[in-house]
Amino acid sequence: MKKLFFCTYIFISLTTLAQWNSNNSINTGVAIAPKSQNNVHTISDSNNGIIMVWDDNRNDATTKDDIYVQRFNSSGVRKWTLYGVNICSAANAQKNSTIADVGNGNAIITWEDRRDGNHDVYAQKIDSLGNILWTTNGVAVCNKTTTQKSPKIVSDNAGGAIIVWEDSLNFYWDIYAQRISSAGAIMWTTGGVAVCSSPNTQANPKIEADGLGGAIITWQDKRNNADYDIYAQKIDASGATQWTANGVVICNAVNTQNNARIESDGANGAIIGWADKRNAIDNNIYAQRINASGTVQWTANGISVCSASNNQSAIDMKYIGSTGVVFSWKDERAGVNEIYTQLVSLSGTAQLTANGIKLSNALKSLSPNVVSDGAGGAIVAWQDSTALGSWDITSQKLNSAGVIQWPSGGVVVCDANDDQQYVSQVSDGNGGAIYAWEDRRNGSHYDIYVHHLYSTGTPNYVGIKELNKSNQVPSVCFPNPIGSNSVIQLNNNFSNHPWEISIFDATGKLVKTANIKSNQTYSLNASEYSEGIYFYIIHIKNQSLYSKGSFISAN
Image (cartoon, rainbow, N blue to C red; front, side, top):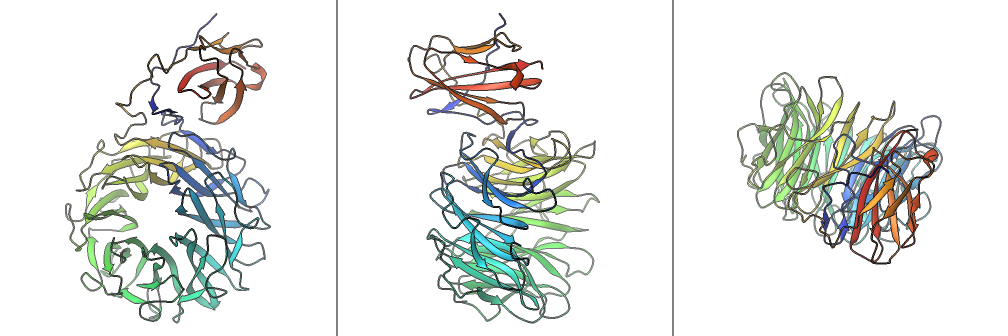
């Protein structure tokens, strides 16, 4: 009989067994399905876990995407249907999904929808248990005969949401918005409220809650018929615009300003950042603060966040409290793509080295994403290139003063085979983060994976009490490697309670669960397991008792 080596590092927090796979080459699978899963967006589940939405091509042999969503709790336990809950599988393509936390673990998802042949905007609500709350395949937010695209969403602080999009009603692209109630009822004018309908193109809207039930919206605007500027507008809970008709100028400097981002300023106003080519040579990063009344607070046309040589672009930003806003961007000052960051105070003053500090150390780096760490600092994640030409996911943490907290160059979140890209993360509420991304390790298409780093930048929380004898129940799998008569059994289950077993493959994918009576064994059918290593977790029901082990299949 060959006994298992027991996992040395088994940790618990209160009565919860950690399920996160700590190996950054394995991680935890979220959606491992045929064809591609991509465009993942994340929010907190209101309880230190994560909810993810993505566009999913599993159901169609051609190019049609549907919308799926999944929740993992703070311990890494999948809470909803394996590989995701189907939010919309209507005819034709649904894509460009995004998501808002609307409280109590509930979420509202919005997307671009072609079920009627043209592009419309739809939405759906899901509760913390994974129940779909509105009409099957979603509620029409805007379904004009013209095209609506690129929706963005925020909570309305009443269980509903405010959604903004680009709208071709007037032949050029304009900016429209709509509010949808907690029950899925349209609250404003049918077809949406015009946020900006100036001549020529308005595009790429972003939205942030104003803390009063309304929202502040920013976009890039070509009303001057020459190049893009940045404008903003506030809309209240009743759908009335609050500032100058068609928006307040945030920046109308010469040449193009684009790719705006927006964050709350903590006082019912907003801080807006963008890429700026006013020097006529390359893009730099600029920012402006606007108060609740629509008055800009910093230097006209914005303060320079970074004006280093060559291009700075792909900006992201996050308000972290009284110390200000953390900006991060892709930076080409050294002739390759790197990730830089800057902390800007609420008065518009850079707090770190002029033009920012470098976070990345890879050959090249792209697509930064910033979240609060829940403790006054920020966590930045991005994709790093490798010597083999593939992409991995890396992360770094800053404290409230902008001081780097994790090792130089960042901590590896995922370095599995092939490409990992377009990371989106949420705070875990305890100084760490939960990350989700597109992952190509399984072949020619992308799946969705997730990983957790604690506040220390490690996948295991150093210092949490290890299982002691009162918590640990020994278990054994024999024979191992498994054969036709292999079993897993608990040793000394003195509690006489039934137990539950969950079995995972090496990618972190849940492959089997079963409920076992107190003194029975669990039989393994070797023909059901392809060649590889498998991990199991046992929970003694109604007890704070656990066991963990592994077995090998030689098929």
